[in-house]
Image (tube, rainbow, N blue to C red; front, side, top):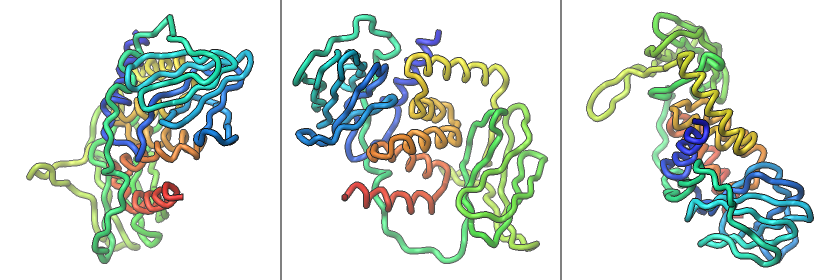
Amino acid sequence: MKNFIVFVVLTYIFVGTSFAGKKDPIGMIFGVEGKVEYNKTPYTNKWRKVRRNKFIFEGYQIRTDIKSSAKIALKKTGETFVVKEDSIINVTKSGLTTINGSIKQFENQNKLLGGLMKRFKKSQSYTTVRRSAEKSGISIDAVRNVVISSESPIIMWESVGIDYRYELEVGYNTYLIPPDTGIIEAVIDTFSGKRKFNIKVFKGDKFIMETGKYRSRGRMKERFIKILSRSEQRNIRNAIEAINDNFGDNSFMLGSFYERKKMWFAALEQYKSYLNENPEELEMEPYVFALYKKLKFKKTYKDELSIWNEKMRD
């Protein structure tokens, strides 16, 4: 059962995800044993240690030390290979080539990797800063539908400014949220099932605006938040355990799993964790940008995307 769960998760990650950076990953390193390193700029001596699971891109080199090895799952074929000890390999557009040592197809191929990365769809839609006329005044927006767990009952939205406070309405409950900057995080009481939510903005005692309904395909719709049931949370925990059994503590895999479950806040936390641990992997940041768009973090998206574009030009 666990293998099936992880197979579905990984298929979603590299088939269902609809964007990537300016370079798509060729594969992923996992199951690292001993000293394994990668080099983003071949023919230089800029080797970095692979400490955890890591995505690899065309042009990379991978090398293993004595009594060291690693597994690599490839995008094009879905196959998994073992890089043997004392080896150096090139990562090419079509797969792997050996410079020294040897690689071998993983004999105990796990079915959960069968469809890994076969159709990673490339898109630039989240990696371009679009110039538009600046609107005067403030506006409030929030995610339309989101799933959370009772273990982390948090709703997030983007602040409209330090001078404004909020009233978060979830079903019949109202939560008073003080002014803050950046991303607002509000803890709510747990409940069972699905409830409408709305965010009202106040300046002092004066009501300014609210998120209200949103328009979709010509119809006005409510925003909803769902809290997982006990059985659903148990299934989530089983899936996470299966992912960790196969890949170790891999925050990117967990983020993609949460995204598939519409647990956008949890997915964002995992993606940010992965990128904090792997700051050199600029190519993977568009996953975060897409979540910012989904969560309606418009200013955060624009600011961080501008910084990312500068880094990509360096």
